[in-house]
Amino acid sequence: MAMAASWWALLMAVVAAAAAGCGEAAPTAAAEAAHDVLQSHGLPRGLLPAGIAAFTHDPATGRFEAVLESPCTARTEVGLRYNVTVAGQITYGRIAELSGVDAQDLFLWFAVRSIRVDVPSSGVIYFDVGVVYKHFPLSFFEAPPPCVPTSLILLQPHQGRRISGGRRRRVATMMGWFHRGGVNQKSQF
Image (cartoon, rainbow, N blue to C red):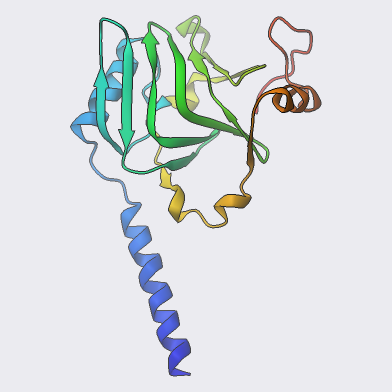
């Protein structure tokens, strides 16, 4: 009986420590710089999560790199998963050559290759996940989302599979997503 009580106490201590670590922390200078660069390029601040430990940006080439405290998952209207390093090339209204970001649809994760806002007044942002573009309201990304470290997410391996290549095209067709220059105009994750 004492063994069960000590296990229970240990479990509660781990849960309390994890909950304390997930609290809202003050934004770092790196996080502020990253979100300011997004905003100055006509993109919403919430494309990158809170919890950025380091950020570099070369204004001449547009290349940027954000280093997070740990890989994490943001659960907002759009499920996004971030690697420790998120990198890409930023120009006004667009992030190209993006790496380190996956978007979730149902139980599948798709690598986000680029993000663009054609006309800011349209209120729409587009994610390129390979063979399809997904569009969302800009309002989903107004503020940097809190990001739960993937080590704290229970059953992480069962949250979904990341797909690429030809399988991505077949899944996109099955899900009814529209293809580049294509016919089917169904949208939203």
